[in-house]
Image 1 (cartoon, rainbow, N blue to C red):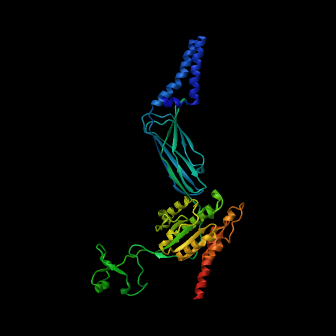
Image 2 (cartoon, rainbow, N blue to C red):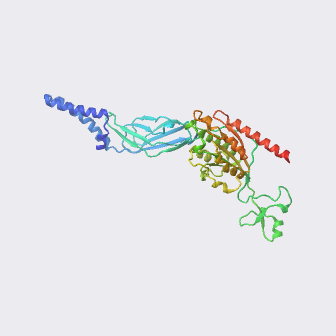
Amino acid sequence: MREALAALTVRGRAFLAAGVTTVAAAIVVGHSSLVRIGVLVAVLPLLTAWWVGRSRYRLALVRTVSPQLVVAGQPATVELTVSNESRTPTGVLLLEERLPYVLGTRPRFVLEGLGHGWRRHATYQVRSELRGQFDIGPMTVRVTDPFGFVELGRTFHATSRLTVTPRTTVLPTIPLGGAWTGSGDNRPRAFATGSAEDVTVREYRRGDDLRRVHWRSSARVGELMVRREEQPWQSRATVFLDNRGTSHRGQGAASSLEGAVSAAASIAVHLTRQGYTVRLVTASGDSRETQWHSQTAEASTIPLLEALAVVQLDHSPTPDTQWLAEGNGGLVVGVFGHLADHDLPFLRRLQHHASANLAVALDVDAWAPHLPVQPGPGSAAHLTASGWRSVTVGPRDRLDTAWQELGLQQSRATSAAGAGR
């Protein structure tokens, strides 16, 4: 009852004040009929508050976000289902969904009274021009009586997650290199083609198919030998994103970091579609979520895009290099911002770590033309001095055109190597 009295609306408080005033004035002037009218006006909001306070509403909410993974600028649909699981019918329900400001204004709905077991559905759309992970909810519900005297608030604690990935560009196919790898019993054959003695074999294990027994090798070693299981070979690629704060300029969606994230996402998606197993590495190193992904192209891009959706500026002066201890990393594609002289050792080590290397260097000064140009020879010069093939991309340049230029550089280098032999 105390909660209901505290939840009296302006109308309820006005009726209560008007009733008390009418009763007091009627007593002073001696009009008994006005006393009854004043009592009725004052008691009505009190009775309503008592009835609402004793009501035990049991409301259930089901929220569905579809799709849960969208590209920046694309809408997602949120469907709400509110049901009354108590035996007491509700009054008018005022629903308000809490949203981060980047998803738009808070949607509000008005639902008429719900009887026992009744359900009401509502839908709305959200859209974000910025990448990130956002929580939708919780939902607040305000229950009002038919007269509008009392308004009680309730909050559902459940929330739903929406992931907004960076925008990507479809890239053309260019000649690429990389290190080949396999799994399971997959090993290099002794020869691509050869005699029966060239077949790679191993010891027989319980449960092996007898059709895989290699009888000639078994006779030679005196025990059963079977052909090794063949599994598809995959080519590895590492996408390195330089997200250090000292490497980028600008703020928000217009910053060079957003351009770098979009470029890294486009390259990662392109490489997975070309059959590469791709991992993402940032200046803070690699993480379990962004290690080698060898599923189908559609499935393997999801963890990469989810990781890129939440990439923030890293405040370390130099990139983490622990992941470089793994040995040859195959193809390495780097997306760099501003590079200084102290970055040269890292660039050379990363170049030696890769069997092939390509780089996209962002002209970060073009993202902040109002600021003084950063001193130094420039990122492209540092990359060239470290043995990288690179292109420079500004905020108005097309990434697919720059990627095509990298392919031309790769072709020229291959032709020059062939002519040198």
